Length: 343
Image (cartoon, rainbow, N blue to C red; front, side, top):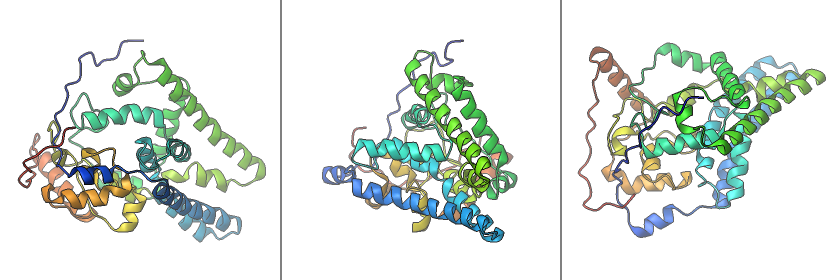
C-alpha cells in the first residue's frame, strides 16, 4: 500500500477566539449527566415515537399515516450524525460511559462510524477550511436545486454510498486521499477499530433484515435501516449552512463558520449546532451551553439570521462565484476585543 499522500507537517493555525471571563469560561465547560439525558433521551424519544408510529400504521394498513410517520422519522434520523458528532466530542455527558454508549447507538442507527469521524473531525477543528490539512469540508461548494430535491423526499444514492462505505471499512479498505491522511497505515489499531465497528453495523442491519423477512415484518428494516435516508431536507439546509458561502484559509472562525438562529425545535433536533462559530471557537463547551455562549460573544459576531436568511446569503455567494470564479465573500466583523484567550 502506498504511503499517505500528506508528507509535510501541517501548519498550526493561530485562531482568534472572542475572550470571555474566567468565571463564564468555567461555567460554559461544566458537563451535566442530567442535561445529557434530557438531550439524548428526548431526541431518541422523538425518533422512536415516529418509527413506532410508522410500523404500527403499516401493520394496521393505514398507509397514508405510515408514509407520513416514515417521512417524519427520516427528518429526525438524519440528525443522528449531529448526535454522534456532539457525543464524540465527549461533552454531552459528564460521565464518559454515557457519551460512548449513546454515540454508538446513534451511529448504528445512522450507518455512522464514530472512530473514523473522530480522526477526521479533529483535523477539521484544528485546520478548519485550510486544505489540504482539512479535507472534511472544502470550498467553494455549490448546491443545485436538484441536490436539494434529492434530499427532500428519499435519497437512494446516499443510502448506496453509505452501504458501500461501510462495506469498504468492514473489509479493511480505506480509499481516497482523506482516508489515507486520517487513518494512515501506521495506525493499525485505529484501522482495526473502524473495521470492527463497520462489521457490527453491516451485520446488525443484515440481521434486522433477515429477522424481518422471516417474520414478515418488512416494514421494520424499511424504517430502521432505510429511514435515515428519507426526508433529509431540513438536515440538508441546517448542516450545509455551516461553512458554505464562507471564506477559507483564514484564522478567524467568524469568517469560515456561520451561526444561524432557527426556532427551538430545530435547534433541539440539530443538537444546537446552529451555533457553529461558537462551537468552533470553544469546542469543549457542551451543546446545551452554546446559546449562553452565543449571547456572551454576540457583540463580536457578524449579524445572525435564520435558515431562510442564511440560504439567501449562500445563494448570492454561489451566484457571484459562478459569474466570477475566485470570488470571496466579504464578511464585516465588529471591532475585536483588546484581550485574547489562549487556544
